[in-house]
Length: 210
View (cartoon, rainbow, N blue to C red):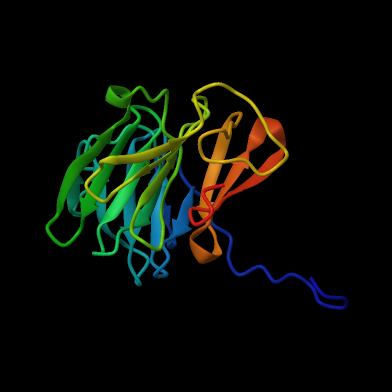
């Protein structure tokens, strides 16, 4: 806030118990990279897309969520984050069952892309899609970052599942993390890693592989 200027309250929203979206705002929500707004309810195991009229266009959940709103059946369990694939479908990561789902609003369908437990993942944090269309996923307490192609095939893994830290630049084969809270796409194809228990912000550079 610059000197001499005050904050302006745009609106105040009071959620009643059970409310998912109220006045176009969710308890937890985020904007997709194309500007559309997603609402997500982690412990209630669903997410939804909010339209321009502040109403839900659809939800994705194991069972229908809101009467009159189309639901895309998907085995979400504590969903964490969603990002857009190049073809307009969404990928959704789930902390509860370590699964990555592809949600296709155009066909109102969902497909399991990655079963993390089958790959030995401890859990699954967030997911981001890079400029090449690869999907990056972090294990929070598994101390690893994974890269998948758009079909869910594992391409590479950073970290060996053992907590650690290196202050200097290290290769993909050597890097270690400790409790990865979040990942986000950066400029030039880089991936930012919030390496929580190391109190560090790390940068993955796929070009230099460090």
